[in-house]
Image (cartoon, rainbow, N blue to C red; front, top):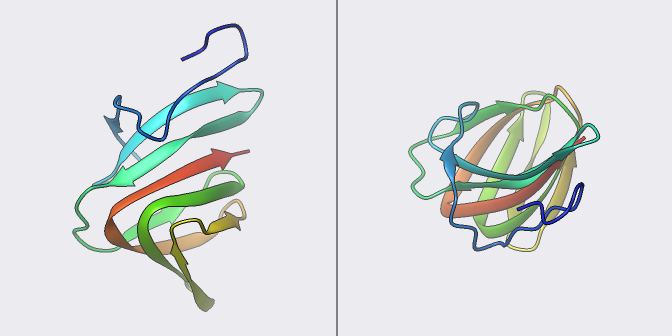
Length: 109
């Protein structure tokens, strides 16, 4: 919701989710797109296998529900759970092993 120009409001319990065309098996709730920044949430209600993701921008995210192990082709993996935050650089290739239900709040800039 944009109650006034440039002011965006949402909730961690948002009800308006759409299939994410970039990440099969997940849904997305975008609540802000302005000034070269996107913010929103993604969720996976049922994990069906690893998800691959290469971010098109710097990604900062906070795990709100569930857990994830993020693997990189050339290094150690990350183990993240509720309350953990991470920042991934633009263009990094990742494989996400999700423990569902999973929800994250993210910002791309």
